[in-house]
Image 1 (cartoon, one colour):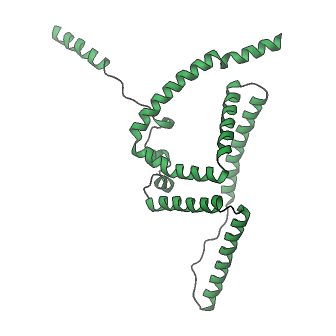
Image 2: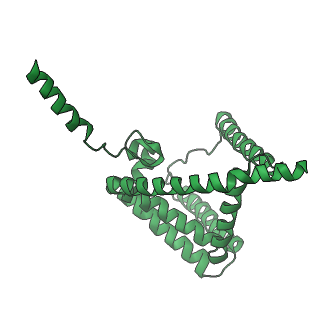
Amino acid sequence: MDNSERDGGAAAPSSSSAPPPSTFKLFNRRCSVHQFMGGGKTADILLWKRWRISFGIIVVATVAWLIFEQSGLPLLLICSDVLLLLIVVSFVRANIAAYIGRQLQTLPELELSEEMVNNAAASFRVKINNMLYMAHDITVGKDFRLFFQMVVCLWLLSVIGSYFSLFTLAYIGTILTITVPALYSRYEEHVDRFCGLICNKLSQQYKIVDDNVISRIPEALSKEKDT
């Protein structure tokens, strides 16, 4: 009995003194990166499992950025010329094939189903309503934290927009979308550990600011209204 009590007493401190493993995951994931991104063809492309398509997207995005941004030509002019070239080539190709008696490969009919349109409209309606609710809460002064977050986000967008054009931002977003998920999947453990430390530091600093500054502003405003 004494030996078992001694063994149990000796085993308990060793288990309690072991440091807990780091469980932080970006976006609170409980699955792999591939499953989190849908697990389909899109996830394969973003994670470079189909590297030819991923590399092709980067090449096409770079060429498009050079055409739109560096050439200085208007967007309407470039789009009109490209569509004109495609229509003329397709029309001439179809007539030449009919003249020489060669049958072209049939193209699928492009048609939007009613179900697809209804689903897109319903999803769009929900997002618009959420934005309207947020705007209502901000304008009537109900949620100061939301107001503060929106001011910071819009200010950051204004600063970024002063340095980059819309096409450059779209190009940077495309490159980041193609490269960042693959890099994160490769160095997932190191990134999660580093982001966990940053999130802990930021949450501590935000709690201090929230307790000392943000949470006191609505009380001060209500006191001014009462007086």
